[in-house]
Amino acid sequence: MQPLPPKEISFWMETVAAPTAITSLPLPETADVAVIGAGFTGLSAARALAKRSLKVVVLEAESLGWGASSRNGGMVLTGLKLGIGDLLAKYGRETALKMYTASMAAINCVEQIIQEDRIGCDFFRSGHLELACKPAHLKGFFQSAEVLARELNHKVRVIPRNELHHEIGSSFDHGGLLDEASAGLNPARYVAGLVRAAESAGASLYDQTRVEKIEREAKGSGKMFRLSTSRGILRAREVFVATSGYTGDATPTLRKKIVPIGSYIIVTEPLSEDVARDVSPGNRMMFDSKNFLYYFRLTPDRRMLFGGRAAFFPETAKTVQKSAEILRQGMIRVFPQLRDARVAYAWGGTLDFAFDLLPHAGQLDGLYFALGYAGHGVAMATYLGMKMANSICGEREENPFAELPFPDAPLGIYRRTPWFLPFVGAWYKFLDWVN
Image (cartoon, rainbow, N blue to C red; front, side):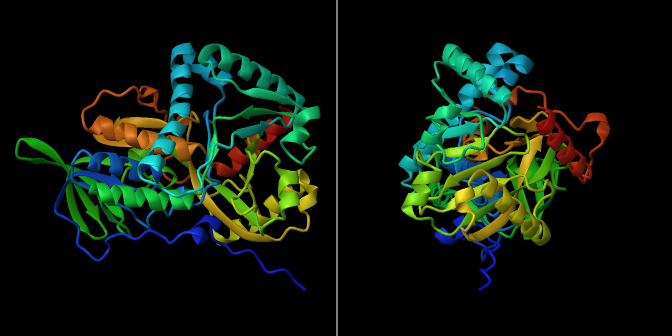
């Protein structure tokens, strides 16, 4: 009998009722702050701004949480796309340590919001395990562990290959780096909780409302922004852009600084307790050390979630189907014992990468923004959304990502369409081969 094909929908979205917005009501004429995008960044900012009694209007082009916020692996991780060694080499000790410290504070921020607003999203401090694909990568783990302990008093543990079976039921890798501070959650339930929290604080959320143009205009003695949307005109004193990998024509300066890259996930049917314990004895969040990486974890109901950059282009029906088979073959290479596990779900989403692989937050063309999470968005998007809300309110915030230069594409090669993504994918595959 032919197995059922996987559902081409995020598994997480079937675990919660999708949050709804006030689409039946017209837009207000004015707002103190217009927030563009209703993912982790925008919702976190809206919650914080509304708690200050500001009139906040959130504008989402699709449904609430539609983008990467409901489609990711639910990993709440310390660190950034660049490791601590690269951060030190490129940015110096002071800035590097501030950035890494912010990544740890971001997890505490998520946990605090979940506790304050009683968000049931299966949050748990599981820890994460980075897996060394090559012996040289394991050597780098020892160096990272030493630096983190010395500079930040942050204890992580290197696991040699002969002890790796205590953490993962696979002999595919050469060792691991275990960080107990990281966590896991159900991202769709977290989005739904942030929606409720933002609305309870007084924010107004509008979905199916695409921002088409943003213009500055003088009004009395101050400035205002005029936002032309698919539902009409909104004028706002400040605008916060929280569009991540879906940054588009309304903010062209930001668009050319962000590369949208596809990431894809499969989820199996539920595994037996014995098989689940075999593949992931510690129930960690796991990912490998390649550029073209795999990431995987067990869901709360013991399914294997397995994701990666199977294709660099953003998702389409064709890329989801192709990527699902690529990921299934990758899952079987890592976990041969899952050869007969049926893939029940397959989907794709779009991540946002800056050209320096770091998050950025600040002001550009008069607009506030936060984006560029490069796969670390669950924690960092929540954190920077809150930080930028405080900045909008005039507070002086310790935010190392606001001080970084925000580079454009080299040689001006990117203005609208990321035509170079196939070459980027080939380059990273080459680097994984030689490194």
